[in-house]
Image (cartoon, rainbow, N blue to C red; front, side):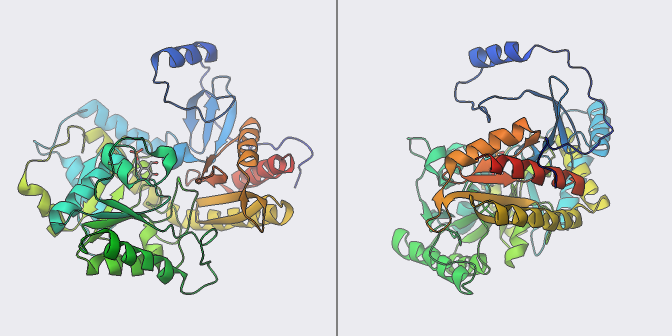
Length: 449
Ligand SMILES: Cc1ncc(COP(=O)(O)O)c(C=O)c1O
């Protein structure tokens, strides 16, 4: 592996259009004047991204980057995928907007295609626009269908930033100081790296799940509406649960009258490689599944999929969503499902994920700052620590690697409560040559901390 000179991106046959919009400086000025000061930029030296093609992004100078984060785990099949774009273009030119007050073929066909991807009795879709909205709606359905109020979620979870989903989220970083938590309780984070039970303990899943039961017994009336869990925690730093965790947790929740909700916003659509849905890697079937991000490859599209019985609970009043099920978003989502099948992207995630892990292992053997490498398929993370034994979070080093990787042409994510986990979740079309580049960049960046 060549680390003496700057790593080179694999050749790629796409010429970005010459950028002719406002300058970087002008955009910075407008953004700071006219956009909310709450918006954060990801880098100390920000980049302005103006074009995308499959796994690559281009800045205003025409420089190409490998997108190792898929636009926050959202671009599933590739930026501006030609088939998806074609379907969107067709729909845009035919009918851009209608709502569910009229029949429309695309939403119906899309719901059928989605239901065919689901196991068990999960067959009824409600389309919305964002993951937060999907989780809000799932919480409403859980409460209506069970007649119970209390909801459980996991510490270190991220489920969104709307008033209700902020209550589910369990990271002080993302929780504002106002009431959003009524009836929501958070159980122990099932983190085999930092928690008391590791992956080497065959009963770890059961032990962590016992806290769900404990919470039901001590913090609720003993009856609950539901339990939310990401299938692998995303924003929380790619936390993979020990085997059996969800199975045991679901048993406790169902025994208390609750429904189980899988948040597949990051883990769905084949990304984990072993299964189409992340929850399948834990051997469970939820009662409600929420999805967003990768579902639309960048469209403002999300969904709640549930059983006919639970879906019926929403008929007590009228529930309406203006853009939920918009024909353009649905055309895009339907095209994404077709591409995943046609291009065999789930298998690709498995194969590329294994190759990526081999590279991570090489990095871990070489760089003491890596405390753990983990993930499934193309949902991966590298946790950095200043001391492998004490597991002291290497937050500063993580920020440094992250910034340097960008300067070298690789965009990745970072997360975890301490901000010390590099999150690598690229579009599912990534190649071996891209992974070689990624490992070279990380190797060089890690050597410099
Ligand atoms: C697991 C998970 N659930 C829900 C959300 C919220 O989605 P949105 O930002 O579309 O509201 C996110 C966003 O990062 C997420 O990662």
